[in-house]
Length: 275
Image (cartoon, rainbow, N blue to C red; front, side):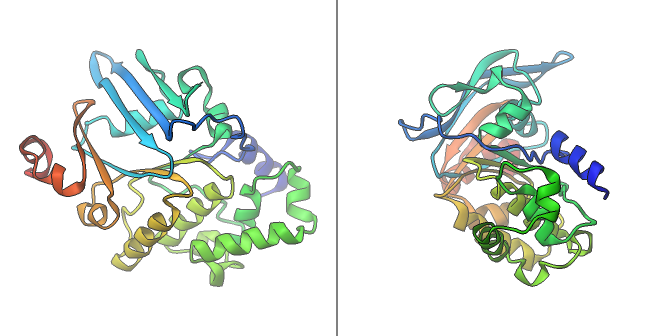
């Protein structure tokens, strides 16, 4: 990828990965909640994708969101990240930041990262370069690509490579990685931007059993330092990482609580787990 193309990709983002600079210093987390979704409804051509949806995510929480196809999971993430505007309701990041009044770029810059199902990386650059490009730093693309890294920046990248288990792949072209490794790389790229909240859409789809197990370990290690919302259909994976589960159905919260609680809820069994 040529330098102008890289600069364009960074400025525009790439299918869900924003490379802007995070500004979370003013985020009010005094009540211990990082995300409020309050009475959100969204309709598409008469179909109500979200129906008075309300829930909240605590600071440092790892929340799993499940539900049948059409339950509103993707629409919920679209609303939180500014891709879809709600017909009614509000979404607050912290106590006061109303996401429904912000653009996608502003939301990403505020400290919300989203991981789509298909990894978005710079396949013709090394794993190391991908993390460097994503780094939170106020510098031009030319500086990023061609200047010497400050020692602390190099240390940050090395630490991230270790965290996402790609240290031995640092010099490898990103396009040569396995599917699971590409997913980890994009998660690492998001983490380089120091988000407060990560939305992860079916992160283990297509992964091997070993990759799925490693992804579970990664997510558990991130909880506490970041807030995570994981949307996933793989119930075995959910069982490994779940602390609290929200079940969506027809655009609303059907059940919420520990996994064993929602698994035994007759309503959940009827509309989702029993199918």
